[in-house]
Structure formats: C-alpha cells, structure tokens
Length: 394
Ligand SMILES: *Cc1c(COP(=O)(O)O)cnc(C)c1O
Image (cartoon, rainbow, N blue to C red; front, top):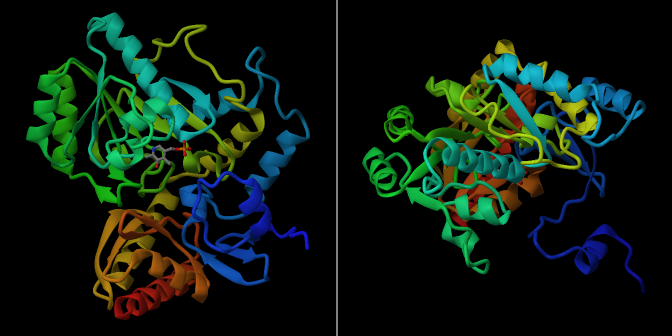
C-alpha cells in the first residue's frame, strides 16, 4: 500500500539531514502547539528561538498578510517599503548605522566575514585577514561559517576548510590574546552566550577583555546575535548586557518572528565598507519577511525584557536542585540545564508528557517564546523536571 503520511513521505523524499522527533506540528497559537494526532504540546523551544511572540501571533499575522496582499517580492533592483523602515528601527534600537538584509543566520555571518576582510584589506593590509572565533562556537553551515565554527564535529567530512580562521578558548583572555598575537587579525567574532555549543555564557570580564584586545590589535569586534538577539537574553541584543560597542552585529532566528530573515548591522567604522556589487541577495530584504520583522522589532521594549528576565529567574528557581538536574545555565529565555540522565531521553520524556524542548550538547535547552504566559511556562517546567527525574533513574 502506498504510504502518504508525512512521516513516510519525509523518510522517502526529504534528504536525511535531520534526526527528527515523531511529532508532526500542524497548528499552534501562542505557546501551545498541536500535533497531527490532535495532541497538544507546551512549546519551550519556539522553533529554535525564532517564534518570538509564539505561534500565529495576531499582530504579526496582520503585518505579514497586509504586506502579502500588496507585493510579495520585487527584487533589490527596486525599493520596497518595509525594509528601510525595519533598518531604521534596528539602528534606532542599537545605535548601529546601516543594515544588510539576508535570509538566515549563516548568511548574516557570511556578510560579517566578507565585511571584515574588505575592511581589513583597506585599513590594515591584505595579509590581515584572519577572523578569530571561539572554540565551541557555532556560526552556521555554509563553508565559510563552518570554518568560523570552532567545533571539529561540524568540520569533519567537509575538508578542506575555508582558510582565514583561528580559534581561542572561551572565557580565557590569555588564550585569546595569544591567538590574536599569533595571527594577523581582521576581526574577532563571538557569541556572548554560545547556543549550539551548550548554552555557555561568556563572563563579563572575558567580554570586556575581548573588546579591549580588538582595540589593542586594531581588529573589528563582531558579535553573532543570531540566537541571543531580539530580546532573547533580556536585552534587545545580548551584547548590551556587557556594555560593549561592536563594529558588526549579525542576527537572524527571532528577527522575523518565524519568517526567514537575517540582518548584518554595521557601526560607524564599517557602515560604508560594502559598496555596490560587493554583496547582495535575491530575497534579502524581502518585503513580507521585513514586515513580519518590523512587527516583532517594534514590540521589543524594556517592559518585555523585564518580563523575560523575570521568567528567566522563575526557570532557574523551578529547575535548580531538582532530581536529575545538576545545574542551570544561560541568560534570559535562553537556558541550558545539565541533566544526569541521557539528554535525548529527557527530550523524549518531555514530548510524551506534552512539552517540546531542545537540546544543545548534553544540556536540555529551553528557548520559549518571549511572551509565554507564566502559568504555561510553569506547567512546562514541571514536565521538564519530571522527565529529567525519570531519565536519571533509567
Ligand atoms: C542558528 C545559528 C546560526 C545559523 O543560523 P541559520 O539561520 O541556521 O543559518 C549562526 N549562529 C548562531 C549563533 C546560531 O545560533
């Protein structure tokens, strides 16, 4: 008999790059998602930190569908309304000067890397082309961002790596200085909280040292805010929690509230590095994605960040010291919990009990919608605690 269910079709026709869980998400509202079998799930992952205001937020839907009914795409040969408005909003909220729009986090980082190389060639000399990144980082899956990613497990099978990258230990200022000293550096690229690397928060002193070292060695300071950004860490961008002033900021994931859009933002020193013909993207600045992002970014304010920080405290309180949980890490609504049981078993246990959570390395990772109601979050955390306790006994 021919199989037409989503699981069989996916198995037969979709390239096998994902180890999926057996849930087919068919609809959702806010932080409650519905599976194809009618089962409901509390969503503590929000599409990997993307659905900032949860599933099918009414304000966001209106912004997206209004634009969809006007013009869906025009190409970058012409002007469309939402992109420049969104860029202005981003600049107003960050103090950055200009924005390049693309479609994903990897592309936002590609643009940052290209900018660093061009800036360094013009200001330092062509031999200053190394971009220093941190071990355990994640910057994307294109060939250049794969090389920027400081984890060998992603490199394997895809050698030779794109040259021009060097890696330093996170939270080790002496090692960072050694790497910057040994290489002719164009830029330093960091995530302030390493997401895919297991939710590792960089310390205040390391980030301050990193900023100082970029000044000492004349390199650009670039921050990858693909996952940490757009309110996720209790500030507009996570770098703001550290009081640093980056030259380049990349973001994506949460920016579009669930639509594919990435942005690379440029400060004073880098605003005019990219010139006509040096970079581009067919879909970059797509008006529908920009309208969705405008709806998201215009609502990222101090009240929301305060609520994010409050819910963050609630997660720390509710999970710390629970059976099977040995530590809670992270910032804002980007949390990683150390579990004594198998992390995949915890994720599966959560699914069985009706909650969707993520993992990162051997930590259970939680990145719920920023507007998740406290009672829904609380119920979700009870499920995480139960699943962690059960996995610990297995
Ligand atoms: C997810 C992620 C990326 C890659 O984003 P894509 O949209 O998947 O290309 C890059 N950097 C960080 C920090 C990320 O978390």
